[in-house]
Amino acid sequence: MREAAGARSVLSRLDRAVFAQVAKRAWPAAEPVLPRLSRAADRGVLWCGVAAGMWALGGARGRRAAVRGVVSLALASATVNTLAKGAVRRQRPVIDRVPLARRLPRQPLTTSFPSGHSASAAAFTTGVALESRGMGAALVPVAASVAFSRVYTGVHYPSDVLVGMALGVGAAFAVRGLAPTRDLVPVPARPRARVPALPDGDGLVVVVNPSSGAGPQFTDPAAQIATLLPKAEVLLCRRGVDSLTDLLETAAAEAARRRGVFGVCGGDGTVNAAVAPALRHRVPLLVLPGGTFNHFAADLGVDTVADGCHALAEGHAVRADVGRVRPHGVRGAGGRGGEGREPVYFVNTFSLGVYPELVRLRERWSPRIGGPAATLLGAARVLRTAAPLRAEVNGKPRSMWFLFAGNGVYRSVGLAPLRRHDVADGLLDVRIAQAGRLARPRLLATAAGGLARTRLYAAARTTALRVTNLPAGAHMAYDGEVVPAPRGLTLDKLPEALTVYRPLTD
Image (cartoon, rainbow, N blue to C red; front, top):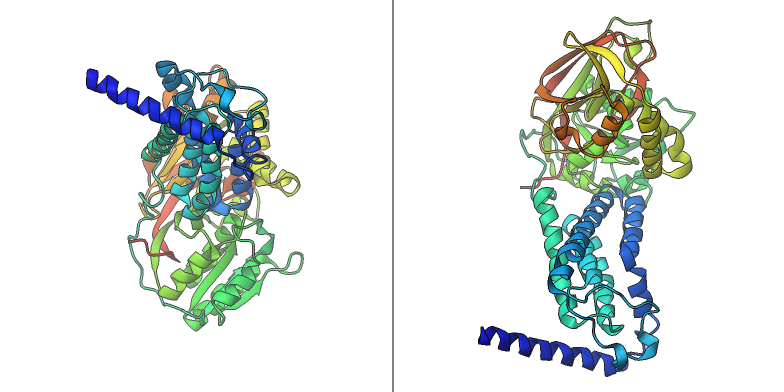
């Protein structure tokens, strides 16, 4: 006991001595910066702003890093403010030694140990770094400055800051334990496929759809492809002039004639439109992200155009499953999706119910306010106005908010499928949120992540599903496309039907 008390006394004296040295030393360059930076980090405002910028400009990897950073910050903040501060109750430093120009306009009222600002800064930066080392490295000086500013302005001792930062780093790793990053759960490399390696792109015919949305790169994707693969044939789909479907068909046929590779650069809807030509002409597919959302490319590990081009140059590919929708009980003749007798394919997800309406609203509003904001506002509208869908699923009548089927098993939170660990598992991930008493509050609980805690949620992993007696006016969504649904349909799988390039991770 005496030894422990002696050690605490030594550490306390050292802590106060370092604080005194910082207080009396002149820091001319820091005076106009650090107090403002410290105030900007109040309540995580600084980090939420950084996260918003990463979400808007950082592509798929930036969005993952932003979410992980914010969740890590939230866990660190909750730990510090609800547990650590109440357990220790250390008094704040005496501020008399700190020059008046450095002091904050409002002094904190909470206890000193540990530093919440330092914990939040370390948690956010570590969370970002676990998804993107480059983005994390760029934030390290900012996080360190925020942490030091708490000593500089006289509101924390150095040990408060160091322990807070340690708790923040621990929170980020705890979040990674619950939701592993891609380096811990790599996209499966099986089953591998033998494909041609095209270092300069000779033999590649790629269609670029510039109207897909804002991709993860700041350069023109067509120009980037031409630079990385100078011998590739790049076909640009001009809005109002070219038919995307016809252009994709022409490109796939030409790639098959050359015994080469068929490529597509765009969002998930553009990639979906390329699947049927790739299957029909039996050519390997190069998927390059170029849309607002690029879920299939991300699940392949292709986060940028450069990732896909390097996979092509090195000849790395896998076989992937394809989901299929076979309409029956057709309402009319011709048309895309549910109105014709031809099947449609999906490589990500299929849904009935509220999600097609959400996609429709997102597509209508995103040109004006951006994809993320349109998604949030669309979800709020759907939660307020949606009505359950009545149909029969495998012969059983159901009233449901939505039916979701993933091409492979997804990890999810609430309504949102997050990612797959296997693109060739042979399974449909089927989830149904059923209606009932207190239907709208239950839908809200579903959206908030309460699926597993309600009896009105059903989940199964299967290879086929039959849906019949769909009402007039019902719509279905697949890979971000929304079309009228037929009277009935069958969902099934084409196992390992599509050969796609992807980076080698093992």
